[in-house]
Image (cartoon, rainbow, N blue to C red; front, side):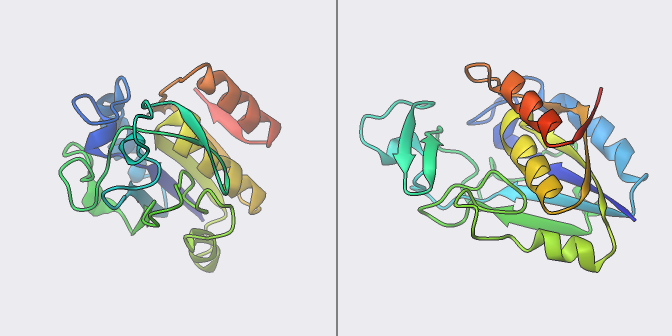
Length: 198
C-alpha cells in the first residue's frame, strides 16, 4: 500500500500569499493527477494561532527570515502566515482537496513551530500520522508540496526515520531556498536514503 503526502498546499505559500513560494501554485495540477495513483492521500495544513512564536511580529523588532534560539533549537522567524481559519490557511482552490483521505493540521501549539508532518519541531510531540499510516498498511510514501527545503524535507526525513520507504517527487514541489537551504535539504534527504525523483 502506498500514500501520497501533500505538504501544505495552501494559499499563503502560493503567489500572492503571506509567505509565497515562487511557482507554488504551478504544482497543483500535477498533484491532482498523482492522487489517482495512490491508495491513500494525506494533506497537511499549517494551522497557526495568531501571535505564533514562529512569527517575526511576535518578537519586537525582529526581521522576517532572521533566526533565533528557541528551547527546541534554532527557529527561522517567518512573516505571519496560515493563521487558523484565514483565507491564507485554506487549501489552494486548484487543489482537489476533496480527494484527501486525511488532513493533518500542524503548528497549532503557540510556542512550538511544526515543519514535519510527523513531529512538531521539538521532535517529541507527534501528529499521529506515522501510526495512522502503519495501521492502514501504507509503508511506501511519496511526498510533494511546499516548500521543498522546509516542510517537505523535514517530513520526508522523519518518514524515513520512522521506517517508511520515502520518495520525494521534486517536480511537484517548490522551494523557498533561503541562504542555500534547498541544496542543504537535498543533500540531507539523499543522506537519509530518500529517493529524489525529478
